Image (tube, rainbow, N blue to C red; front, side, top):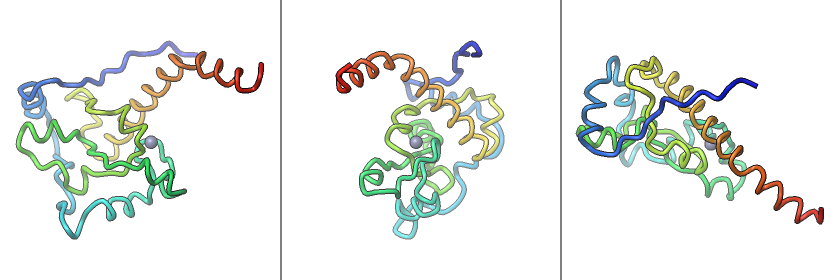
Length: 157
Ligand SMILES: [Zn+2]
């Protein structure tokens, strides 16, 4: 087992910090690409284009109505970051389908401004998927004993 490396992702807590972070981003603003959100392009189109799968963990959100109920709309680059700088946050390339679990884990977390993942949507999704998996692992490690105890009790052990 490798040693756990602390994540470099961060969550900004003020609009001034968000503005400064956004101003420091370099490279193509891929999150502004694609269709504009509107009557012709909304959640249904995002869901269909994503094949109904969570952008981070690939969970099939079209598998059942229960799974669908846990489907959320994800702004890849957090809405709060873009809004603070008066930038559109809901263009197609910034939107994805996401399960509620992954969306809650990622929240407003941001890779460092100089991270190479900012260069493309694909690289950004890959790095955020890694971050979400890291959060899930930390949760698992934190709660595994409690879950085990509940399951043992249910199994009469
Ligand atoms: Zn997911």
